[in-house]
Image: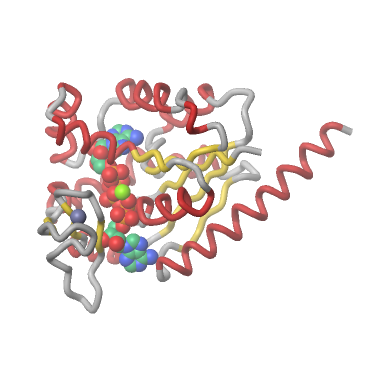
Length: 226
Ligand code: AP5
Ligand code: MG
Ligand code: ZN
């Protein structure tokens, strides 16, 4: 069975951290719409120019544009064994479109990461990213690092991690993405996880949730067959 995963949660919840880990451990690609848009900004494409203005304000890029990107991405061969979506869907319209794209496939497993607003603001003000290789760092011992341990380049604050943009991203999350909980919560493949623990503890909780859900899905499929 392929593993079709969605990791969703507010800005700074640890979607990227966990999705990257899941991608490696499960051997499936991490598909981050935020990363795809930032790559387009970096490359200076039309999409990048459009997206940058919106992202720097903390708003969402249009559903039509993002759904088009995901539709294309999910046609590639590397998703045969599954994928982990990070930052998509983030509106109900995107979630409806995703169900339609995946019609007839394995059930979507949805993991929500729950983190307090206070911790989110703290994490994002301390996050540093590498301008060269894209690595992401959190603060250790309260101090954000300044040099990338991967490639030696300088680390910078992500352009949408300025305080006023973070507050707007949190507001947009409440207004447009939080309704996804109501959209997904009745599915047997939905789990809400406490993201206010160490990254390793969150990872363990996600792995356990995925494995339990896989068993539930197989049981349901067997009972519906006969
Ligand atoms: P996107 O890049 O997806 O940003 P986001 O949702 O705001 O989330 P972040 O990437 O900021 O946080 P994260 O949850 O990945 O946390 P991370 O693991 O880095 O989107 C950016 C923009 O693109 C959007 O605002 C929008 O404009 C546009 N966009 C993207 N997708 C779109 C879509 N589908 N539709 C429309 N527009 C779209 O962790 C954060 C920090 O905390 C790091 O420093 C990390 O090291 C640290 N950390 C992680 N886990 C823990 C832990 N357990 N304890 C302590 N620290 C931790
Ligand atoms: Mg991210
Ligand atoms: Zn680097």
